[in-house]
Image (tube, rainbow, N blue to C red; front, side, top):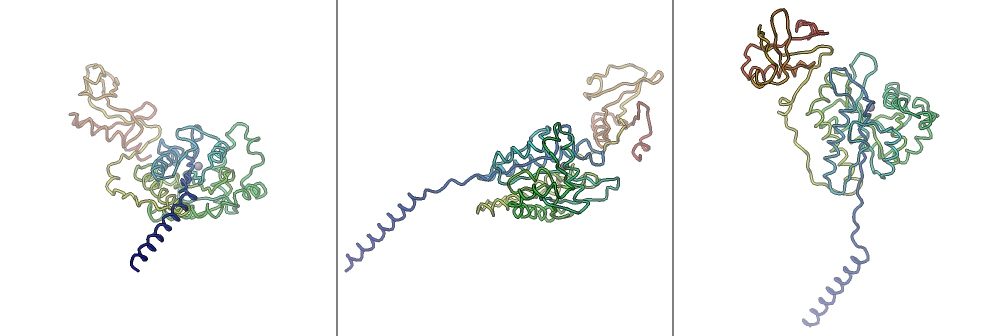
Length: 376
Ligand SMILES: [Zn+2]
C-alpha cells in the first residue's frame, strides 16, 4: 500500500514537471518592450521662448533644456525605459521636425517642457499648468497656445508646413484633434499626475490640466502633454525656476509623475527611489541680480603709479582693469552686470588682502552712485 502511494506521488510529480516544462517551452518569457519617452525641451537656438522679466540671462529655452535633460537622466535609469530628446543642445528643431522624429521613434509618451509668460506688464500670474490638445474658448489658454505656436512664423516655408493652421479657429483644429483623440484619456491621465506632483511635491500653485490647440501636440500619435513649469514674468517664480533647487524639485516632480504612469501602463513596479530634497541646499547656491545697462567693478586701489594689470601685481587676482582719472590710476577687479556676482568678487578680493576694496557702478562709461542703480 505504502509503496503504491509513493509511486503515485512520483508519477504525479513527474507529470507536473513535464507539464510545467511544456508550458514554459511553448511560451518563452517575452522580453518586455522598452517604454520610450520623448522629451521635448521647448524652443532653442534663435527661438529663446519667453525672456521673462529680463533680470536673468537664461530664458525659457535654457530652463526647459536644463529640466528636460535632468528628467531624462533620471528616467533613463529605470529598467526598460528609454529616453530620447528632440534636442539636447541650444538648437532649434522646427515643431514639425519634433513631431516627425517622435512618431518615427514610436515613443510611448511625449512631454514638451516650457515656461509660461503673462502678456502685458503685470507679472501677477504664477503657478504650473499642463496642457493636452483640445479646443478652448478660454482666452488665457488660447494666449498660451498662441505664444507657443508663434515660433511657426519664424520658420522658413511655414506657409507650406503649417498650411492653414490657426489655433484660435475651431475649424482649423478639429481635424487635428480627431487624430489625437485616441490618446486623449491617457494624455489627461499623465497631465493630472504631473499637476498633482507640482502641487504636492513641488508645492507650486496648481493651475490645473488644460486644453488648447498646440501644434506640436496635434501631430504626435501617442499620449502627449505640454508642461508649463511656471511664469518667468513673475519675479519670485522666475527666481525659483532659475535656481538649482527649483529646477531639481520640478524635475523630481515630473519624474515621479512619469514613473507612476509607466508603472501603471506596463504593470511594472519600480523600486522606490524618491529622492529626498536637501533643505539646506538653497543657501549654498548662487543667486544673481542683473542690472541692465550697468557695469559693476570692485575698486582695489588708487595710485599715481602706472602698474601693469597682470595678476602677479594684484595678489593673484585676474580680470584686473585700470582707469586713469587726472593723475591718478584706479585699479579694478571684475566686470559684470550681476550685482550678486560682484558682491562675491568683493569677498574674494577682501580674502586676498584688499580690506578696503569697494564696489563701483558704471553706466554708459560714467561712474554712477551704487544706490541709484540698485533702486532703478
Ligand atoms: Zn514655450
